[in-house]
Picture 1 (cartoon, rainbow over the protein chains, first blue to last red):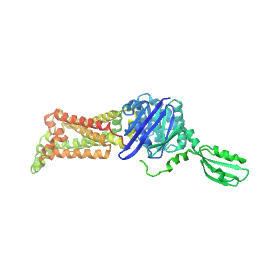
Picture 2: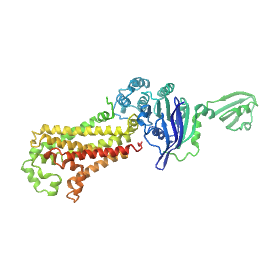
Picture 3: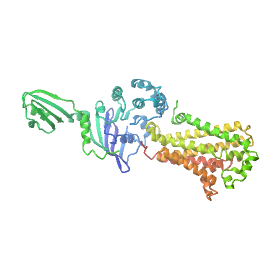
Picture 4: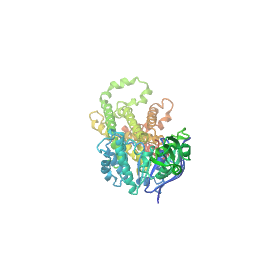
Length: 300
Length: 263
């Protein structure tokens, strides 16, 4: 495995405010990495550090084996970037804008513009200022994907996209991975990321608070379980570690289980079980649990 | 289609550039075309009673000759101030404007160094300022006969227009430099314009206020002080304007390469 993004103790302080605290993180080639956190957690700060738009106050970063600052031009040739707030001059047409950006890359990137625009249902002849936010975001997506870069860095890529285009976007991302490209994408919505991401990192107030494969997170996540018995049961019997919100209503017992349901299943096995329903774990909820403690004092 | 930042910058600014050059040229031609009606005795009589200080400040002491009139009016007041504002607004937009709007993030995420971006934007500024000066020059040459300005040679007109272009480039470089340091367009434009107006005043009135030395730091002194309309190309003055511009761009590059891009 080849490490595409290698961050070691990366830190950024704005005056007295902390933007990012000692971030250590590796992203491997061919991986879709979901970078999650609420607005202001430091996601964009991290991304702008990777692109040398801002400079770290501590630690080091290597991207595609290069130094973001010293090798900026060589590095930027090999990556595609979509800013959280994609802005270009509104007076030009979409075609004019994309052709110029492709020319800056100078590697035949323009050839893929029509196909990508077609797929995203983007009108190349429209003036940028006449476009809705979602359509403007499509321009951003085309410029990020058009040269099939080794690394895609996407900051809140789905913001403003309607559900249909969001699906197309997820296809593009998955195809990119299948093609051996690496995707680093940020979001503040778990569901957006969990569908495609291989791994997820969760950022809170400039600090990485969780980092794991999506399936592992799913295992740890809280799921709602409903058990039906042939006779009423005593809920106290099911008061096990990891089980919360216990409620018994006649023969029916409902509860929430965090992590493995093993203990609960073994306790239930002492009775006659007539029904068992376990809902898909909600990662959004897991994500939220990282923010419910010490919620005050947000970092901008 | 624009292939690089230099051509793209000029292309995006085509309407405003057209406005600046046509506007500045029309103002220049309007002032110049009044010369036949001003050169008679009436004007001299009217000015005779003005205080000497005022006459000196506005170069009104030699209105009878075409060179003196053009230097005092056409190239003395409105045209250089227009070019100053062109430079200040273009220079402020070059880095600070795109930074504030968020467009700089996208450009700099492409294979384009910060140095290259600044130099190409400066190149566009040089081209724009030169374009304005060339149009003013062409316009004045065209009306030279009709406006009785024949005593000023075409070469001397070119010499003055060269300094005009350099004046715009210098204030553009100042705004570009300031924008490269602080990245705030409104502040940069206002500061550059204020410096422009103050140095204009210093050149015109510094001596009367006992601040004669201020003339030597005023770009307007190197722009007009050598009277190119009478004496032809003033290579020393032109060289100082050009060198100062390059120094400012150099300082801007140094600062811009070292700082964070604001969001």
